[in-house]
Structure formats: structure tokens, C-alpha cells
Length: 252
Image (tube, helix red, strand yellow):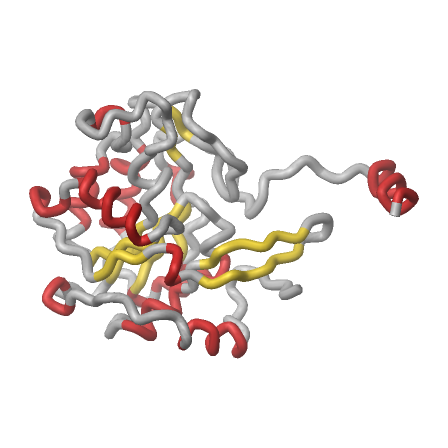
């Protein structure tokens, strides 16, 4: 079991694992800026979990403002996509975003096969999860880690990305979407969501930062008209009661 907290150096054995991951395709022609945005897809840019999903109707799966967000950000940042989905589904979801029409050319678009399995222990729980360490991206490309921002709704899979993470609220098109346990801010539901609009404003504001590893992004929503839920929590769990712990030990 590896106990790890955000901001610490990645363990050396983890770096060895990263070096053995398959090498993805990197589009060097898409590298135009010094800084890179690494974007998650599911619940960050779109939601394909609702039974009302219609691939021919973007209103049933695209997060409000996502197309304008991608278009605007691509003028000041390079764009890469990193998802926990399989590569097949990553490619399908990017087609749903219609990047060619937007003029957005990602440096890379990678999925689950480019993540590592990692374990995290809290005081009461242990979590075995897939992680997206940003150091893997700096190993593959010419970007320095101080110039990379990781945008995601999942605080657990970004645990190894240090202070470079900007967490957003996970978004769902409707209450009938498949909402799992979230590891970060509380979720947002429906077409009234404006988080990507405000995120774009924030990312534009900090684009001149010399070193993203020294900028804390945990409270970026505080000055935005987004319902404030406090700093993102790594896990959202019901505290374990002492009585339950005693009963569990007795049963063992």
C-alpha cells in the first residue's frame, strides 16, 4: 500500500512504471504554444451516461459552453486529452466534440492504457485507482511540467499531478445520468451549467504564470458565480463510526 499526498514527489518506483507505458502518438505539428492544457473528457467536457443520449443531438451530451471553451483555449494553450476511457471510446468522444470544425488540433489524445494503477490510503479507507501523473506527459513531450495545467473533475486520478491540477465540478446532463462517487467538488446538473465559461476566464487570467507548480488552484471558483462547496475534497465518504469499527473487528 502506497500512502501519498498531493504535492509530494512521485516515488521512484512509479517513475519506472511510467517509463514502461506504451508511447502514444504525439502530433508535433500541433505544438504552437509554450503552455499545455491536459483535459479530461467525461464529466468535464461531456456526459454520455444518460439514457436519453442521442449522438445526433449535441444538446443531450455536450456540457454547456464546451465548444467555445475549446476554441478559445486553443488560441492561448496547446491542447491534449487524457481520459480513463479505452482508446476506442476516447476517439469516439472526440468525434462528438467535432474538433476539426472548431480548428482544435490536439497534441495527443490518450486513454486508460496510458494510466497507472495506484493505491492511496486515508485514515479509514484504501483506494485502488487509475492515476494520470503529469510527469508522464513531460516525459513524452517538450513541455516542462511548470507549463502544464491538468483540468479534471476527479481529484483522485489527478493525485500524482501535484499543484498543476484545476478541478472542476463533474457535470451531468440530467438527474438520470449514471452518477458515481465523486472525488472533488460536488456535481453540476443540466443545461444551466456555466462552469466552463468561468473556467475559461480563470485560465486566461493565469496564462502568464511562470510556474504552475507554485500556483494553488483549489479555490479558483470562489470569485466566480458558481455555487461554492468549499475546497475540493479528495473523497466524499460517510465517516466511519467507532461502533462500526468495533463490530468489524469483532466479526473478524
